Every structure is written in structure tokens, then in C-alpha cells.
Amino acid sequence: MVRVLPALVIIGGVVLDVVTPARVTAAPFFAAAPLIAAPFYPMVGTLLVAVFSLGAETGLRIKTDSLYTVTATSELLTVLVVSALALYINGVVRRSGERLASARIIAETAQRAVLPRPAERIGGLRIAARYEAAQEGAFIGGDLFAVQDTPYGVRLVVGDVRGKGLEAVEAVAVIIGSFREAAEQEGTLEGVAERLERSLLREGTRRDGLDVFEGFTTAVLAEIPHGEGVVRLVNRGHPEPLLMGHDGAVRTLVPRDPALPLGMSELGAWPDRAEQAPYPDGATLLFYTDGLSEARDARGAFYVPRERLDGRIFQGPDELLQALIDDVRLHTGGGSQDDMALLAVSRPARGEPERRRTMPIVP
Image 1 (tube, rainbow, N blue to C red):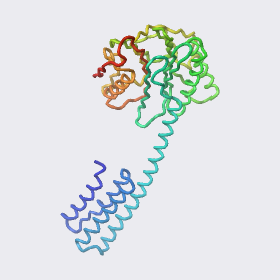
Image 2 (cartoon, rainbow, N blue to C red):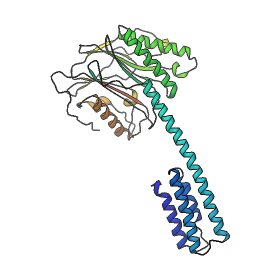
Image 3 (cartoon, helix red, strand yellow):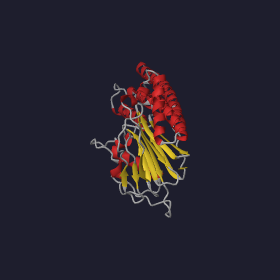
Image 4 (tube, rainbow, N blue to C red):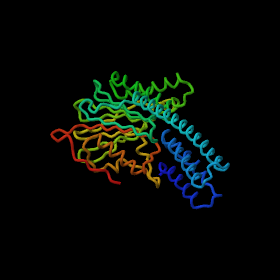
């Protein structure tokens, strides 16, 4: 509608001038048209609207034989000056848009550099990961995931840094960098968690006054040993992952001993204890941040992943995540209040076709 408004304004001005007495002027309509076009049209389009406005004003004055009157000259000069102002505004908006686009590209590049999407297959497992920003065009946030094949099995981390913007991305970089190193070197999952804790505390001390490092990070770490049908978990205050069976049954992997998030050891310290759960062939592990579980609909009802997924079967982890994203958008009406990171890890079923028929999520 906005795109055609300048034309409608010019047409309205012509009609007004024709059907009203000579003392009524339509010049404000012709002056307004290029101003309306300036924020939405390209430079050439704004210039064309200005030309048509001047042309309409000139044509009407010629029709009434009043082109060379003082009033007509004043009106034409007004339209001309306003048109020049509209072209200037158009240039400012266009340059601002280019700078914003560049900033978004830089932000996206930084996010992808810090948070690269894992390969589709790691250690014999099928992997899918998504990062969904709450605001369209925003790529910087504090949600994170990483997957790595190690001598001890496939290890992964999913977390959520308190805070937003570049400071949160710096914390994400610290956590993922520490995880990459610790996952290869530490013999236990508990050791990996301790390394992450020390990294955050050390960085907070080094960057004294940087609020995000004085905060905390919720995280869940997992280890899937090669050739074993189990998964080991250390949960540091993060939403519990879901285990989806090949038959669609969904189980929440709730830790027996809740622990504080990373970066809060000063409030109380106790040793991490990895908990083990069966991870059979054909099953899928779903890890997510609270942007998923805290998404609300118009009535304020939270999105409950387990209820929405129970009984559903998907072709693979990527199809699962896409269905989740679509369903969250349906639940919230398209406007989530928080970023969300999703990671799905599927163990291929033995003796079964790798791809299954997709059953869509329904509200």
C-alpha cells in the first residue's frame, strides 16, 4: 500500500484541483508525494515521483491559464524545493540502509566464525543445529552449541550466556574455545565442565568490570561413547534435553542432582557428576536453550517441547528442527522474545531405512 501511496496522492491532488473552485489549491498534495516516496523508493523512483508532481502542478496551471501568476510560481517553487528535500532524505535513508546492511553482514560473519554450524555427520551420528534470533536480521547473541568427535566419543555443549550483543559473543567464544580444547584433553565429562568453569572465572578476572563475565552461563554437556548405546550428561542449570525414541515416545533427561550454572562456583562448589542414560539406535537427542521453552503465545502460555513432540516421528534431525521452528512461530504468532539455539543428534537405526515418513507438528 505504501508503494502506491505517492501515485494516489498525486491523483487525489489532480481530482481536488479539478472539482474545487480556483481558490482551492492542491499544491500540498503534489509536495507531499515525493516526501512520501523518499523513505521507500530508490533514488530514481523518488525523482520520477517529483517529476510527476511538478508536471501535474504545471499542467493544471496551464489548463487554467494561470501558469505565470504569482500564486502558481509560489506553488511550483514549493513543490520544487520539497522535491529536492525528498531526494536528499532518500539519499540519507539509502546510505543508512547500506550501513545497516554492512553491520548485519559483519554481525553474521562474526556469529558464524564464533559459532560454526557442525557437520551433518560426526562420529557416526547425524547432527543438525540452528540458531534463531528473536529479532529479524539480528545475528549476535549469547546462545551457543558445539559438537566434537574425540577419543572419548562425540562430545557436545549447548549453553546460554547471560547477556546480549558483542559482550555475550565474547563469552561464547571463550566457552567454545575452552570446550574444544578440554573435550580433546579431559578424560571425563566432569573434567570438561571444570575446565569451562575455570575459563569463565579466569576471563572474568582478566576483564574486571565486564558484566557478562561477572554473570553466568547455563550449559549442558554430553558425551556419546563410540559403539555404546548410552549418553552421559552434565547439566549446569540448563533446560533438560529430550530423548526421542524411534517410535515417537519422548523422555526428559532430568538430572538427579541439580547444579549451579557455569561461572557461579563462588556461591557454592561441589563436584560435577555425569549421569548416564540409555541412547538406543534410532533415537534422537534434542538440546535447546530457554528461547524455546519460554516462548509464549498471545495468552502467555509457554511452549512445552515435550508435549508438542510426543508421538511424532521425523525423517531426520534437520526435519525435526525445522518443524520445531515452524511450530514455535505458530505458537508465538511469529514474534519470539528471546534467541534460541537448537541441536539435534540422531543415532541411526540398525536394520531400518535411514529416512522415515515425517509427521507434522500440530498445535
